[in-house]
Image 1 (cartoon, helix red, strand yellow):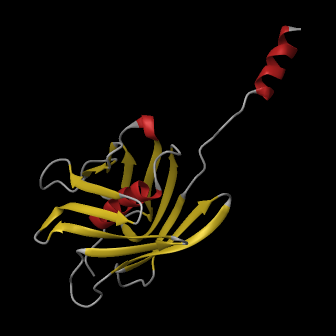
Image 2 (image 1 turned 60 degrees about the vertical axis):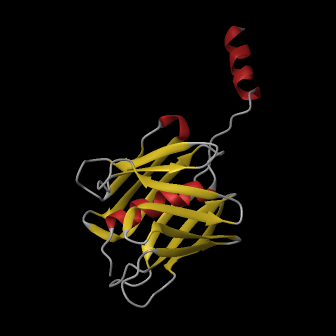
Image 3 (image 1 turned 135 degrees about the horizontal axis):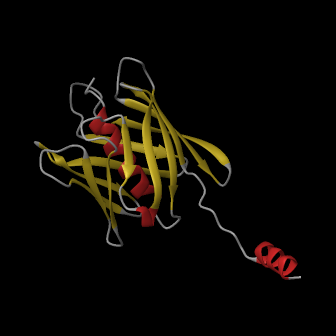
Length: 183
């Protein structure tokens, strides 16, 4: 009798599992890291988006824009000559992105008014695998599909539902930016 009661109790409890959001990133062209295709999952539908340089001419990698369905925003280096501070802006939110340790591109703090969390490389000097440091926000893992080839990335995004698309995009962008050449 207890077993039946326990089974019925388990089936009657609401179970909520976070859904995956970001799935993959791929360069649009094999010889350039200026334009990226984004693949996401929202409400069980796959959605395409893009991340690209605003100023495509020259070597100005300080300003980017992203668009995923109705979500869009910009990501700018805060100070022109200092790549350790960035800001993501959308119509809804502003997200600060800064290096945890000056001059060390392997660990970044993502902050809004509500919270902050850290994304860092899994192994010290290897830039082809990144993880979310704080477990209370769920799981975020980015890794290059082929080791040492930064053109294609797989993303495991099971962060808690209160983490906004902008915060997720900021973390993914800075890992990608830190891991790819300026071509």
